[in-house]
Structures are given as C-alpha cells and as structure tokens.
Length: 263
Image (cartoon, rainbow, N blue to C red; front, side, top):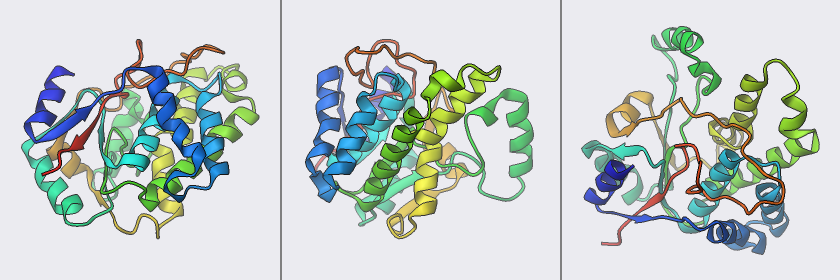
C-alpha cells in the first residue's frame, strides 16, 4: 500500500484518504439531498442500501467509491493498485482532453485470449470473481463531478442492493452448499464489476464519452497485487457503525481515492 501511495504521488496525484466511518457515511449521504441532479428518492434509496445492517463491508466499499467519484470526480484506485509510467499518458489522453471517464476491461473482450481465460479461470477460481467480458472498478476515473455514467451506475446499484435485501440477502443464499460462490457472485453483480459492466451495457448514451481500454492496456498501466483474489466474506454487524473503505479488516479492494492535482 505504501508503494502504491508513493507511485500515485510521484505522478502528481493528491491522495485523499478517508479513515473515519462517519465521514464516509456523510459523503454517501450527500446523494440523498439531490446533488448532481440525482433524484432525491434515488439518493435516499442508495443511502438506505448502504446503511442496511446486512450490507457487507465490500459492498459498502464499492458504493462509497461510486458516490465519491460522482460528487467529486477524479481517480479511484485500490490501495494495492499502483500506476506505471504509462498510466499518466492514458489519463492525459482520455481525461485531460475532455473525456468523461476512463475504465478498463479486466477480462478479454474477444479474440484468442477468451478461451484460455475461461480454462484458467475454471482451474484457479478466477471465474468466481470475473465474468467475460467485464470492466474493472479497482481503478476508474471520472473527468468531472456529476458525470452521467456515474449517475446511472448509482441508480442501478441502489436498485440491485435494495432488491437483494428484499429477497433475503446473503442470509437466504448462504444456506446452500455453494455458499462461497453465491456470496462472491451476488457481491459481483449487486455492487462490484458486474454492476459497472451492466450499467454501461444498459445505458450506452450515458457512457458514450467514457473510454474503455482493453485488458492489455490495463496490464501495461496499472499493477494490482490482489487482482481477482478478493473475498467478500460476510463481515457485517447489525447496528454497527457504517464501515469505510479504510475500516479495520477491510479486504484489499477498498482503498484511498487519488485525485489529480490542479495544475
């Protein structure tokens, strides 16, 4: 993590770290007040889903990063994700020149890599963490606050997490023998990369000015120590304070959000 911090700072990014749970809750809570033209009912639903006692730490970490990017823009990266020298060039090309977002595919989109990826995933368990194709959200950038694509993502996540809890949440699904796979899958599609990928697929107009770079570019621009190795667990406690991405015991995929310095 210290190495990642140094790498971001070395490229001119200012690290904005949130370690206080109440601060993170306040940042998510802003959505309930109609910021960025988000309908207040959507923001309130998002906040209720975030504070639901059975929303896991990983789901909250996902939801926090979307809320923060929506209201402030900038770059989000997991704590163990370090930019290579090539990252700044891609950022400048796709964000500094007027783009509304920069995303990366974390699985092959098409071509000869798809079949080997499926085979490797089956042998290593990677397929539990990523669909094909799927976009990463361990590093993502928004060119400005209130970007339309993030508003669509927030609305989709609010809907999915609310529906998930209304139909029994992790408790009902964990009664099956495939508990581990079920927990991973439902985290993936309610708040994780699956939600991001589906939002882009469902709302092409909102994502029209968002650059999506292939897996080969991701490997060249960002080093991620725990890529495809996170585990969601069921680390929630009814009535406990809402955890932030920096909360004790948080999986590596929760991290500070680097933001580009004003120049």
